[in-house]
Image 1 (cartoon, one colour):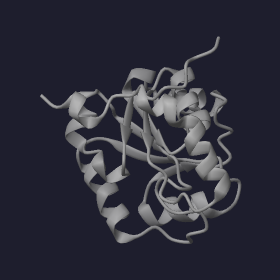
Image 2 (cartoon, one colour):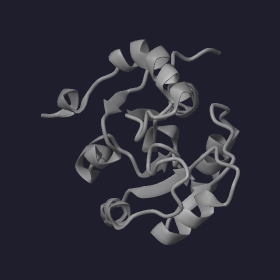
Image 3 (cartoon, one colour):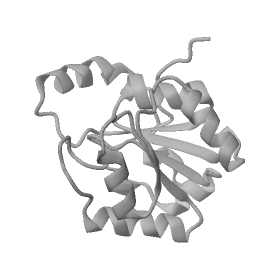
Image 4 (cartoon, helix red, strand yellow):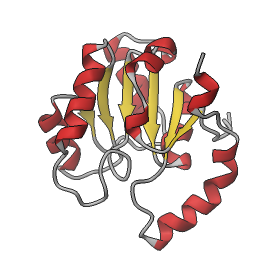
Length: 168
């Protein structure tokens, strides 16, 4: 069945997500895309700001988890530095890796959110799996193909809620 690829929330930076909002949404596991969401393409290490942000989520009872289509060693090295779980080569937008992870962690889709910079991989995977989907502005639009993709995604971005829609 086709699921419309509009995200549930659009944010400019992953750091706009905080534990209060995720807790309010019932999120216990946050799947995080790596490339161009948490770090620019080609970056070799996570920075301290990212590590502290993930630690704050963990302390609030929300498990950050790297969920990447990257087939190389990068997801593992980032996850190890950050002290979080990870899946590489997740094959988003296919849902098999999400379904297996939910089963392994004994969580329902309603307890999981996914955040990433791409509509047709991250958001579509989340929507097809019943997760709360968060679209993050790409860290870099230098690559002409990413800029083109961003333009194609614009109508879907406009359909999503912003953080203001979730404020009380």
